Length: 473
Image (cartoon, rainbow, N blue to C red; front, side, top):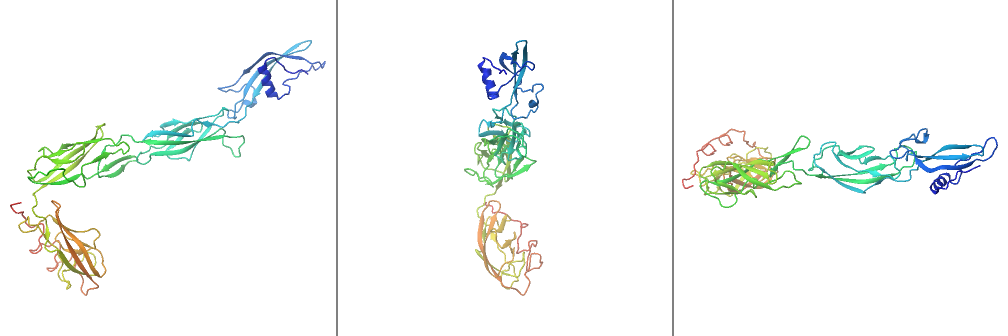
């Protein structure tokens, strides 16, 4: 018997490792039983298949492209010499690796970013693992989410599944898991895995104009938003210049960047309505002041522009309406500070509160305005504080709003001049009687003793009366 030997130490080491001390080849003459002498004519190992890997011909072990590690085939030329002849053979050595290395991500955590509203299919990044065994790797996301996915099980391109609004979602986190074998149950080969945490920050983009405040956000379609406001109102006196910043309702002219994460600087200007140069608007704050007195009564409507300082394509407009009114010298005044009334606990909603316990004359509150010759200001409106059990008509008649229990109820009432906001206050005390033998009148009754808001009599003035302010107003 003859063993393969060679003076090339590299080949000897490889053969020793692969054979574990056993002969690689043994040759014996079949007739004479004499051993051949074996020599290596070429001691270099020649790789047949590596990367990109291709199976060698007639190599059954090489037929599975998803084997943990594709085999490497080496060819060795061996020459054996017999006293009477020489023979040369080609020996193929298949080096089959084992799956003994885990895949590895470059980082344990990845911090990525994505502009909001990026369309479906946008690639955020490629988060790929490596494996020293050269195995084919398989990826999946855990937990799955509605916003992101990977391109395929073998390609870890993180892609957008659904567009994201920055105002709704500011960060998405999930785990990316990689394994080096196909999932089988039960497992047929050793398997290794690795996990990385993916954090994706959503970036606000400049896609919305300024929003005047206050406003109500409204979603249009799937992702678009607008903010609806009602404009601003103010009041100035005729022929009088008001000093300082003019008060407005519901507040001063003010706008914010509709992209809340951007917060770009905004400037203001008056586009129209100020042809008489009565008003001045501060371009940085939006505050409005008077340059001179208004000489014509009635409304003055300004159109105000808010525009981004860095991007003039993002702008919005609103209206500022000033009522120019004749100056009031006197606020309204109630003709008494304390009113007393009576009502039955059995009375229903909209029943009139009566002036005395005989329940035959309705209670009426009245406020006079000395700016008017007859004392009646048609712009005065009466109102109870919120949550009251009572309501009041424009003519001052007090009505029951909800059922009440027996006892005394005291509430505050205001008379407000709607042209300038001036007001007066008084107290209404109502004694709720435990019951009544007669039905309580309501505003639907038509009698001369119980007037309603639709009646116009000499002792119940309405807004149809001819009222005039004093000449000195």
